[in-house]
Length: 293
Image 1: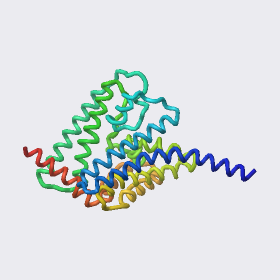
Image 2: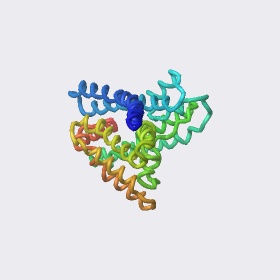
Image 3: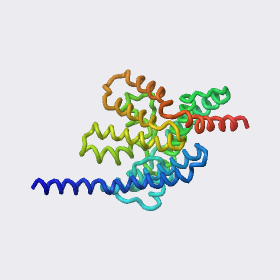
Image 4: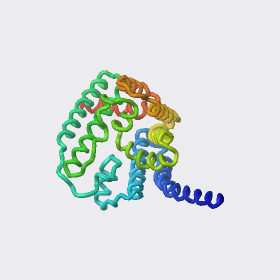
């Protein structure tokens, strides 16, 4: 009987693993091929190319998990919008009848953040201030909190109940709130659907959270250190430390400030020097040249 139970358990594990292994191949094989073809390209070009491949692979994984969990298939047109014209990872927003919904606030906040980010980036560029955390903050305001908020407004205006993907980090209550409800909710949605939910019943909540941050480190290696071919391991260290902080943190208002200070101070760990010199600084230089036209 024990032998039969072990065989049944083995089959159960194989049935759970094989489809998901196939999903991840959708990311890793195209990523590896793209990486080999772009080895001679500038770092910035490699970052863009590899990130596009990663994003599309993530979309495929999330959509497969959505179908696997009982979600309905999207029409081809809606699937295209979800996969190629939106950064979010929640297919539910693309299901059902389109509805009239508010979008003006999103457009307003997006415009405000683009303005503040553009003014700040212009100031530090004009003054020849190349301080990576400061430059990153202004770039993030323009894209993450500005352009993506505009995109949110666009889809909501067209009747799709998408949510803002980046939310005010200044009011975060700690590391768990920052990573789970404030920063890059598209990535949080993907990790929750593809990693945390399947793993939690099998290994428990805390180990599943740790695996989420371990995989996050891997993905950021793919997006940062592999294109830069430098600094391997540092993004993984950054996310593992943040994962530990999420697991052990207690409640308290002081966490808001500790979290934000730690995250800003950790940016040089997340982004190696070569990445800063070949990606962030060239973007800043291009911006400086543009504002002088």
